[in-house]
Amino acid sequence: MQQDRAPEAEALATAIAAEIPRLRRFARVLTRGSDQADDLVQETLLRAIAAQAQFEPGTNLRAWLFTILRHARAANVRRAARSPIMEAETLPEAAVSGGQEERQSMRDVSNAFRLLAPIHREALWLVVVEGLDYAEAARILNVPPGTLRSRLSRAREALRQGIGMEPDSTDPT
Image (cartoon, rainbow, N blue to C red):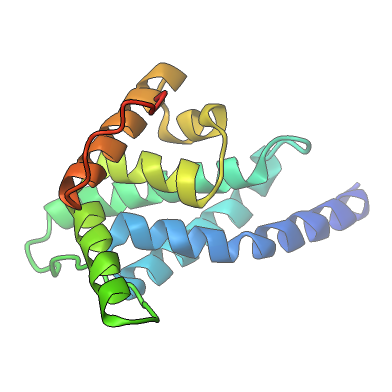
């Protein structure tokens, strides 16, 4: 019986390994620091491997991993709240190439993104950067799709205001 599961486990491990770059990006958004993000990804991978029997083949692996990552992050936040020794998190500066105006524009966007509420930052990251559809992102964040759309709309509006753009009356969300 165990030999029958070996190819499935190998395939799952390979698929999980392919998701590591996305996990690292999302972890950086959640933690704002590369060291904490790497630790969070490592914890996520350990939890995923330990719980691989719970993964249902044919379902969305990325959504499953992102959910594990968010749960691990929540546990870390609770743990940090009990420990005053933990350092404050900081978002690394975005690497930007180009001229002076482009760098300043990217700083403005980065600063505006950093000022978003965590619930808005997470929603925007999952949909815009990771390219997840609304249903998948809502599942990961454990909210109804309508709530996700509302968060996205508020996040986009806050970004526009943060970089000094006029409100967009054509935004459907």
